[in-house]
Image 1 (tube, rainbow, N blue to C red):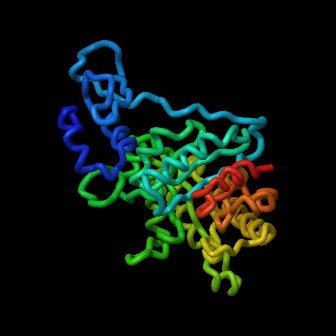
Image 2: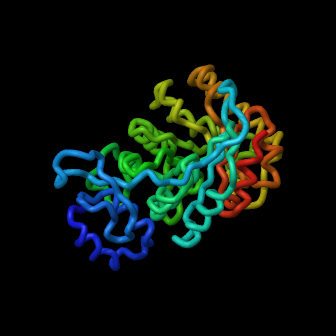
Image 3: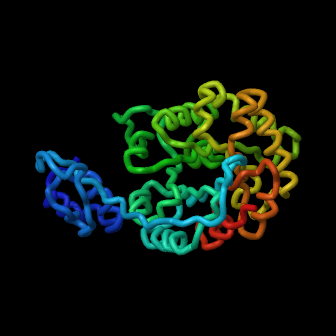
Length: 330
């Protein structure tokens, strides 16, 4: 914890790459001070308590995120649509700020839609300090360690919760495959998911087959092998914090998209697997997102299918077209 505001200000130059807004959020969130303002950015901070020992108060960032708004109604009987953006390893402070501006100015969000954006770790603080409060923020990974400690390079699920993150994306095909490193197997992804859920995070749990696996007719063999370790470690109650993101790997970033009917067939099979291997109640409630090049041009056709409950969207989430995906729910 930073306890000297003047010292925090001196650190600014050495960590300037975080950007002023992001740095200000982090310093304000972890500074013990009598001051009402962050020494780096001048942002307003407030203590947890009006009275008591001023020296021992922990200052926290004011909850100053812009208020969101909704349109329409939701009766609570059906599943809400979950529209997730995955920014992947993209962006700068400038471009992240521009994306937040687009979302903040997007107008009311349909009442039957939940929206979450998966942000690069270096921009989480920035986005949390500016994004409208009806859009949640996800990390794109977390460690398998259930406590902080000597895990160089990892981010613990409890640290994400401490920052205000509410979701994490786990099991994405890019991480299962690996990039200049060993990929994550299904047992590791399941372990991470359980750790994240126990820490209080919700998880977008990714599954999906490669092109040659679809052509061989083993799509559900692949998906069930990815789901099985998860079913072993989660309680039925844990599933309330899980969405399943079905991503046909051959359609990610390729411009190829499963037809709505193809996607529906797999989503229906996945829901059936959950009913058989977890419970019918969980299968009825769990949101299953489609994650293969969803965009404004195809969102209505995909979301019109009975078992497609939203999307995990890559390229389109980096553009204003993401708003079209949000508004594309029936």
